Image 1: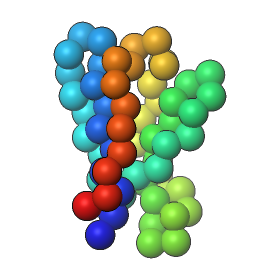
Image 2: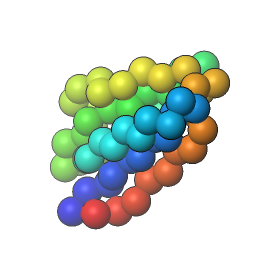
Image 3: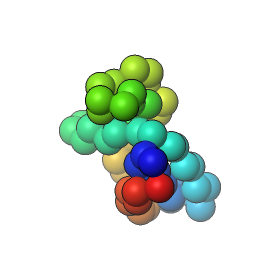
Image 4: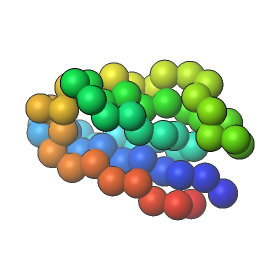
Length: 59
């Protein structure tokens, strides 16, 4: 069981990341996390102006 992050970009592309965590600021960072929710690997670095929709669901 983990968290699934879905990002819909302004150009219509949909990106999905499993076992991930979001950190938002000037850029949106999406990290792969371990069982203890510690970041292990950077999966994506996205400009917030390119994001149409961002949501998380539990698997």
